[in-house]
Structure formats: structure tokens, C-alpha cells
Amino acid sequence: MNHEHVVTQRGRRSRLPITVAIHSTARGRAAGGCRIAAYPHWRDGVTDALRLSQAMSGKCAIAGLPLGGGKTVVSLPLSYDMSTTARRDLLQDIGDLIASLHGAYATGPDVGTGPDDMAVIGERTDYVFCRPESAGGSGDSSLHTATGVLAALRAVCAHRFGGDDLSARSVAVLGLGRVGAHVLRMLAGARVIAADVDPGRRDLATRYGATWVSPQDCLTADVDVLIPAALGGLLTAATVPTLRCAAIAGPANNQLDVPATAGLLHERGILWAPDIAVSAGGLIHATARELLHETPEQAAQRVAAIGATLTGLLDTAAGTGITPAAAADQLAAGRLLVS
Ligand code: PHE
Image (cartoon, rainbow, N blue to C red; front, side, top):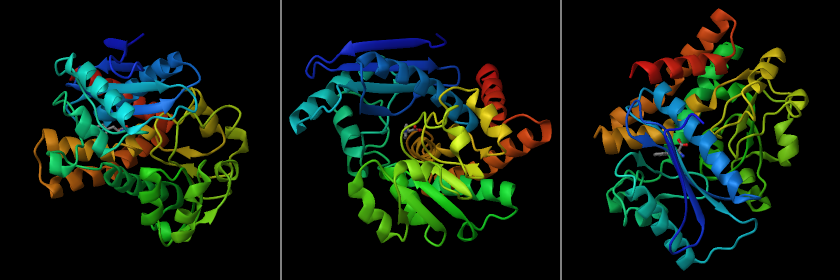
């Protein structure tokens, strides 16, 4: 294990297993969202926390933020139905666990959590980003994550197709959660297909003029850019041969099942934009506003800079014959050492 500190604890109130993984504090306090999700076994949630917290170290380093990498994962049993009171109990348990780390780690929203949840965690600890603005935080980060994704898409299209006009492109949005829905809205004008595991999101897709398809068809669609905006692990030795996109750039964390999959994409000529660069907008905005006390304009500039950061990575990769994933890893590793 490469991590500095990992704790898994059963919540006093909720009785649910909560893991906080701190990968690195070399650049500063560890930061990373709180994921509440169902796993076949609680240990799978621990494994996810280890991988996701490591990715957060890279994400913070590439974004140039004075933060390290961490993550919280609550492993719910499959098809677990939580009442509002039980959820409050769980969030307070999470807050207590974070408080016990005395500032080594601060959390934020992630899959399965949002600003209102951050407010409840904030009843137990100050180390929480993205509480609602009425509760003193910078609010919902998903819009800023989506803004960063759009900046990344323009950079990818400029690199791959020689122009950053997204309306000239066809894209497939896989996942219409908080971030995916914003991305879909912002893509108005492009040719878009969209999918989600929840059939209830179909109306959202059609409202924005997207063609609704199954998640499987979305993954393998013949489009310019695939935008993974749901859970990770979708790019594998089994799925890469079935892809028909020219490029991939999206906000889902840990899109590659294992690092070697980046090589498979490269061999197929599919340009993969490293997720740790593409997905950083929410984190960047929250950090700029809440930690660095910057203005909304300064925060927006930092989010927009994801485009230039990604262009740098893609140019380095193309110029040296390595994968964009390797370029991202090298940049992050360098910044984790010299900080
Ligand atoms: N879910 C965010 C991410 O993966 C985590 C986050 C957002 C953390 C905002 C802090 C503030 O980057």
C-alpha cells in the first residue's frame, strides 16, 4: 500500500462501514469527495477508497493545488434503502470520523452525495468543502466540474480534430447524474447521444435534444468523443476492442480498470484524456473559493485552465511517444516529490 493512513470504522449511529483513505499529504491536507455507494462486499468499498484517494493526489498535483489526495467511501449493501434519519446518522458518523483526523483530510461531494449532505457532515467537522452557500460553503460543485469538462473537450478536439468547435462534433455522454446532466446541457449544438442506467433520465436526454440509447450502445457508439460521466472502470481489455470513438474525455473517476489499459487505447489510436485532469473543475473551484479565498472570476479562470493543462499533457505525450496517461502520471509524480 502506498497510502499514509487508512481507517475503516463502523459508524456509531449508522452501523455502516465508513472508510477514509489518505493517500498523500505531501502537497498539503488531503482532499477528496465522500462517496456513498452500494458494493457487493464492504471490502470492495475499501479497495475503491484506496484507488480513488490515490487518483485525488494526482488530480490535486496536476491542478497545481496545495492539497493531497484522500477519499471517503461508505460501502452500502446492495439494494440498500436508506431513510432520511438513517442518512443523517450516517453523515454525522462520517463527520465524526473526519474530525478525528484533526485536519489531515477534508471531504467534499462525490457520487451519492451533494451540498446538503456536506452541511450535515459540517455539523461535526469544519473540514468539509461545498456546503450550500447559505451554510457558508461554495455550494454545488457539479456545475464547475462540468465547466472543466467542456474546457477539456475543446482541448481534446483541438488536438485530435484540429479545431475546438464542439458543435462540429458528435459525442456520447455516458451517465446523466449531476455532472453528466450539466455537460449535456452545455453541449447543446453538438450531435449528442446519451445514456444512463436509470431509465428515468431519458426525459432529460430528450429535453436537450440528445438521442437516448442503452449504456452499452453509448459506450460503443461511433462518435468523435465518448464522455464517461458515470462510475469508473469502464475501460478494460474487454471493452477497448469494442469502442468506435476517436477520443475519450469525461469526468468519471478511475475510468481505466488498470493502468495498462491506457496502452490498449493508444494502440487503437483512441486519444484518452486523463480523467484526473478532466474531472478537476469542482475540486478546483471549491479550493479556490474556500481555501484560497479567491473571487468567483479567479476561480473560473482556474477551472478554464484545465484546457491548457490538458493540451500540455497531450502535446507532451504526442511529442515523446508516451500515452497521455503516462504524461499525467509523470507530471503528478514530479509534483508530489518536489512539493
Ligand atoms: N468529487 C470530487 C472529485 O472527485 C471531490 C471534491 C469536490 C472534493 C469538491 C472537494 C471539493 O474531484
